Length: 309
Image 1 (cartoon, rainbow, N blue to C red):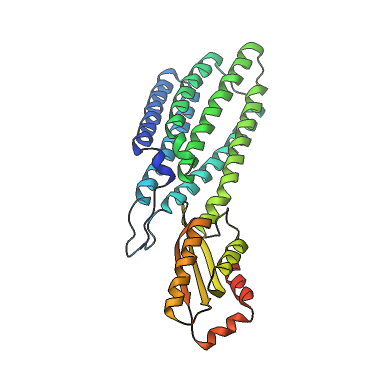
Image 2: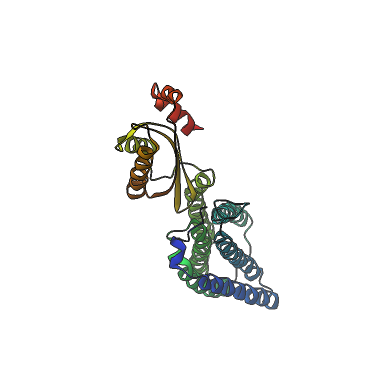
């Protein structure tokens, strides 16, 4: 029974994620209290943005812990795909935030509101420091985990928003150039949407069991057929059990007619798959009866039709 592996996530402890959540929640509380006391709506709005970061990080942490659960009768391949589901949720909310920023920027440009330049700059500066600290806490884990990367992008988008607010605030203070707010917001929104859409397709493919991105199906087939003792191959399926573990299922017809021959072929095939394609979970079937010869007529057509399904 296959259990999930915590490959890339080993680079970062859960403690960093927990502290990142605590820091963002702390900033949220302070900003809400400051907004109530000062009557500045911008503070409360930014507090909600930081709360969304805390929620994204909390979801990433929750999914990470669920993903470590061992395989059982309900989930025989383990729970590692929980991290992919969390990544999909966080990427979706990231894209929604991007489009919301565009709508908000255009609305404010059409109907400008009074802006307390220095207050906004100071608040954005504090938020930027917190966002940078949080991003540094989770950066190492974002390199090899789509789940952590999606949460990391939430913080990056928030940090960029803070930078944009600071720059726009300075232009407003010095030149009364309110269009700077619109321009910076649109740039940030474009970046956020681009990042969300660039990562989401891979996340969806992994959830749907597609052939891993860095593996060419034809290359695997050719390598299998080239293994000494393999007569032909069909019913080939390749997919990701989760982000860092691949699996293969194939039906082999060996040149030899004994079970001993097939066992030797299986060992050679598994060694090749492990070394050349990092596939460590392989299920190999064989058929030594005369009816298997029908597969020799056109093995590729049968194999490819199954791959396309």
